[in-house]
Amino acid sequence: MKRLHCIFWLGLKEMMSLRRDWVMMALLVWSFTLAPVMEATGVATSVNNASIAFADEDNSPLSRALAAAFFPPEFQPVVQIAPGSGADRMDAGDFLFIIAVPPGFEKDIRAGRAPEIQVLIDATAMEQAGIGANYITNILGSEIRRFAIGADLFDPPLVDIILRSAFNPNRDTVRFAGIVALIGQIMWLTTILTGAAMIREREHGTIEHLLAMPLAPFDIAMAKIWANAAVVLVASGLSLVFVMQGTLGISIAGSKMLFLVATGLFLFTATALGVFLATIARSMAQFALLVMLTILPMLMLSGGETPVESQPAWLQAGTLFLPSRHYMSASQAIAFKGAGIDTVWLEFMWMALLGTVLLTISLLLFRQSVAQDG
Image (cartoon, helix red, strand yellow):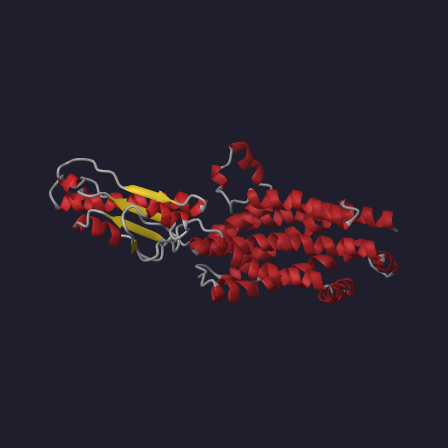
């Protein structure tokens, strides 16, 4: 009991040290407020509010129907421009997409000919240009088929394919990107805070003061682990409520408490990883390099950027030993699919097992590091 009491008060001392570190406090606030918002809304993986114009030389019911098929939020209201002015308007940066319908377009369709529609795209906006080209092709093709079927130009297809998107029916990229961004910030911050605390003790020489007290290396490490994990857990909980739900309007399908339990298990592993990296590094610069070499691959292979199933088979087997993969899988299942403990218990066990192994190795290395410093 006395040992737990010492670990508790040493952890509170760690929180006080963090409170006085304005750089770390600023990083903590930024990472759980503006960073996930910017990451969720700043990188578009779908067309949103794209400017579009029509140069309609046909002025037929079909061409007017084509212009009316583009509407918000994917596109801005269609602007009619004079034929032949498309290139100049695009050079001036007025529109991202310009569609030119030639004269006699509907007449050619009725005659069974294959007229062409010109689509000008400002390809300097690479993401929007590439995705928007597919949007425009599908919309135009769909409207022309609907017109041809209504005019009895050909029979409708025998099979009507209906697409339904599970767990994200509107295919809202902000909802997915926001949760993934929050998970990424949790991974970064936990490792950085714990490891930086260890390095700071060594560089400031306060590790000798701690060793002069009736404390074991285990007590020092556990105090830093629980203190930094608690800070990140509270910050992530507040971010989930006020930033994810309040600012971005993201709804959590499953239990928020279960999401925080998954986060707590991952924090157990990530703090152990921070201690491990801090015992290897001999300076803050070395620690920063090790964090980049470790956390970045963990994020890339976790399944947040690309599905694990899309990775090579040998790499998929290797990701089983990454706690980030199991945390990403469990948290996404809870947040998007409303999964319960009966679905994610295996991921929880993996995180607990990997955390225990990593913590054991970290504590052994930390004892050796403390003994060398002493």
